[in-house]
Length: 211
Image 1 (cartoon, rainbow, N blue to C red):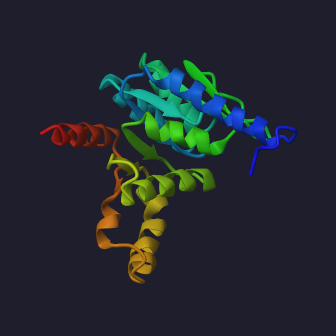
Image 2: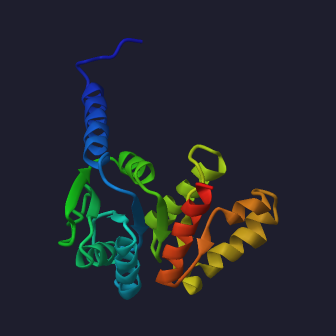
Image 3: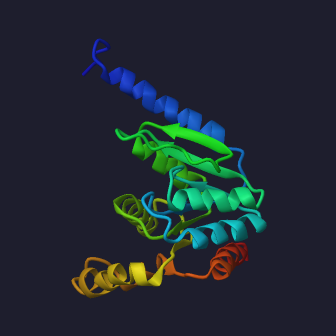
């Protein structure tokens, strides 16, 4: 069926292609990067996010976040204070998400799915601090991509044992118990709270990968 160029759909296709092209061009020359997720609504874990970013920058990593406030802002702040590259992939929302002031490279996206492709394509590891639906969506998509071999295994780290405990127990006692996943799938991520141990795990992962 031919495309109706009098409709709005071709314009939507061109916008999507344009966002992909701009994203790949802007991010293609960054160094090894780590994406940090977390709630835009709270700064409860701000000191942890700042310290994780600082430690990662000192080990040669660029920091990528969703560009907003809360945990994202604190992660960008840690990178900024450590003198590293601090990237924000901001999303256009009905209630505008204002990019935080600690971003050194800002990209704006209209479409969530394109933004998520950029997170996955340009990150060597993913760290999720306590967050809501957005954080859960990003976490589960990542481990699904790894589980189904759509992307190679990379470090996926949950920060905040107390926060994530109930979710992980539900995975074990419900999803695994009802044979919806394999036991090995629970190894697709780790829970680590200490910034130094997080950096050590990521570094060790890639050191071992090259052997």
